[in-house]
Length: 113
Length: 115
Image (cartoon, each protein chain N blue to C red):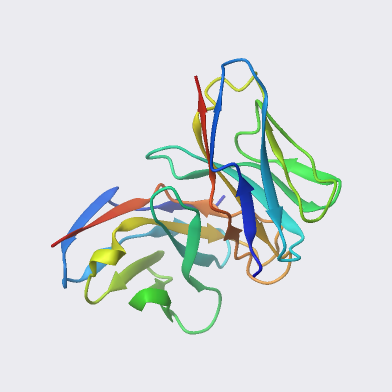
């Protein structure tokens, strides 16, 4: 079955530590996205990538970093510079033609203690 | 710039009653519009989308939405609510049919179904 996997489902880290969230897709999509979700704020775009080895900042990129070394993978690192990292993180992918319908992974809930 | 407003962060309806979730958008060019549903601690699932053509769009689980350009609206409806409809619903807009344009999401509406 084609889809998007995110791991782990739940992640706990101590304050000041960097943490990397995994996102893999087997939909053969060119574009991938990372969103942050907080209660009452909807989804906010962190980074997106349309092609391997290229990515763009979204609305809230500060304190985050990404890489796109393979078409299938788009890991997100939450750095110690992110002031409030506790949130639900969603990865998505889409084609770059058509209607930009995005397919979402199951999400990772990050809690920083 | 594009934007989405969802009126009502929480909506409660009785089982069997009409579901109406409101979405208004702002876009400088003809928009593409989407409704997504999210169950607790899960990702988003596409319910339906409007791109071009017929303005009344039917989606999964008996939901439908109507694109009204004059009102800049894309409200989501379902004639008869079911307990399984309890979830959070997001309206989203994009101004382009290319993947280099991002989706802009509303802040969501949590739907509660009263038995």
